[in-house]
Length: 280
Image (cartoon, rainbow, N blue to C red):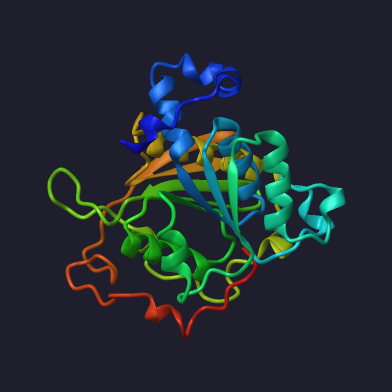
């Protein structure tokens, strides 16, 4: 494997020594992380803790896609940014923070919206995608693009006092030859317009996004290293008010239009008339 040739420097060995002593990671695992290319969709409430911990863990390349700018009301939960960065593109603010935390990490900035026209080119340049977007059109687009690009997707979402997290590898079959589920198996249709208020209306406790974003970083590392039990086919639920975690299982839906028995989608063209992407 190519990552074997990417040796750790003396500084990196010192930096990551608490991970290097983990038998599940060790030197070879740390080199895999150094060689990894992860795309993060959204540099906001979920993307902030996610990218901080991916950078701290030594992910070699982090791609950041977001077309929004930092505003002061972001700072209550988007801890990747600070007061000085208000008004700056979130991608640039994120890159500055990551460089301060770990200069060994390379950042690739995509200061644009993810669209049906650019999604496959952008996603195809990475090993794995972590979706922290805040709107349903983007989530369905990311899901479908990851399926066509054959890229694992670690997905997370949050509400005012709750969140959920799962992993999709819908381009694969399980040991029995059954396709693995996608986002469309879990959520066949987006909710009707107006039924799920945006964060600006519903509100959110910032630390809830921190909890879910940190868990998302754990799952990214696990997927990249192939350790532990994957969240494929399992949805992790967090209820902050009840201080409760629970897990529910879900399965492939043979009627879904992406990888069902009679798929209707062969590319991303079905998104072109429906995309109204909010800032990620």
